[in-house]
Image (cartoon, rainbow, N blue to C red; front, side):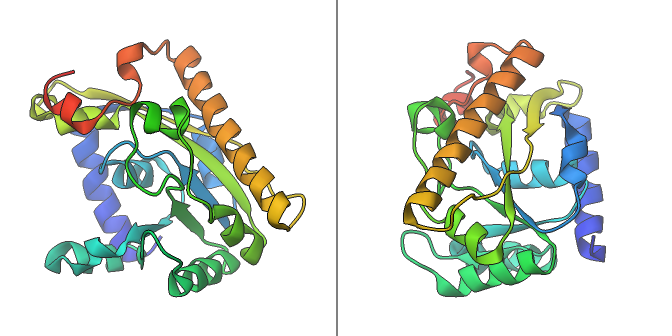
Amino acid sequence: MTFWYFFWRALLKGLFGFFCEIHVLRRELSGLPGGRILAANHISHFDPPILSVVSRRQIDWMAMEELFRLPVLGGLLGTVGAFPVRRGKPDRVALRMAVRRLEEGRVVGIFPEGGIRDGKNSVLEGGGMRPGVALVAAMAGVEIQPVVILGSDRLYNRRNWVPGRRTPIWVGFGEPFGMEEDSGSGRERFEMELVVALRQLRDELREFFCLRVEDMPHAPRERMAGL
């Protein structure tokens, strides 16, 4: 890890450790060597820092370019290895950046849903993903690792930031897998395999930690209202 990544990760680890109780399934898989794409579901703005805290390797996040326009946050993101991507249209600069870092043996974090998704819009509950993650994997010749996070959307409720409350959050790391055929149909099958892997990982978390319906992804506005 770079100095600034280690520094901010240590601060966030203390913060989330104080206010949250994070349970991790197969954390050892986050420390596997080599370049790979970490593909996670996305239910809140807290997902990237939480996943960075529990991962044993640095994650270079592909983040929407609007965040880099904010004076303080934009500079901070650059110090921890994040890089911008334009949403809704092809971004060759971000694609080349992701491929270069993967070829260097780094871990690149991507939210293939394209944004925060909850309920039926979540890939975990029947929603889809935006195409593209398979193309990045094919160009860099790397595997993709599915990751599921649950419970982080509860942090939208201010009451869950009360000292001592310790909001439960669950993270599961899956086994990385690669693409069998680099073609249009091959990449499509690859992305469908990712969807299946994410849903299976959700089911593992639900069974292993005995999760309830209210622990599944909910809309930020519902969490703010106290759900």
